[in-house]
Length: 192
Image (cartoon, rainbow, N blue to C red; front, side, top):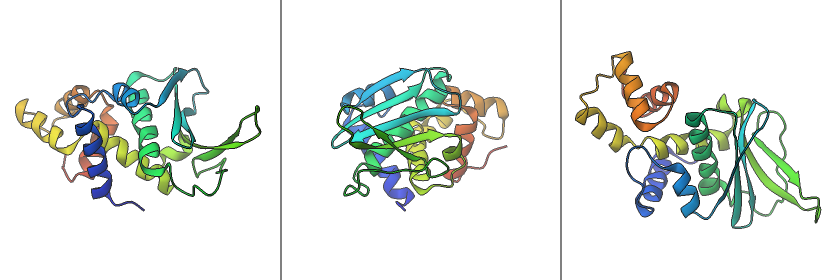
């Protein structure tokens, strides 16, 4: 398991190196700057998105039917898989788990080769799979850097014990209230 400090550091470094350390984080520009392909396509509601990794190339696919805040978190989650996990078990070509592990294989019909796929779906959101826990933490750190949260709270005089102010903070970062509440809890900020 990658510890939280390393995840936080990797997320911050990625934003700084790409000139995107500001509120709200432009995740789609980051994906472009990382030279990752992005597709936003209709999918079943249970599927938020996935990333296909083939060597150094990756393709992120996000559910078009989800709202923008969820799409942004999914995109950040998939970038997390790319940054943290693209070299995991590289000697293996197939990662399969149709239940809780959050990884599957896709068989390329042109050459019958399997490709690594990490997907974010309902089973991965419960936070029981190590790779998905890490990708979720990375996504939260990427979209809601602790220092930027502190700056916004001070600048806007946000009272985190006030539900309206927590929503205002989430809106400023263009994330869901649930994502912001979880992020605040994970960085040790008490709210409500």
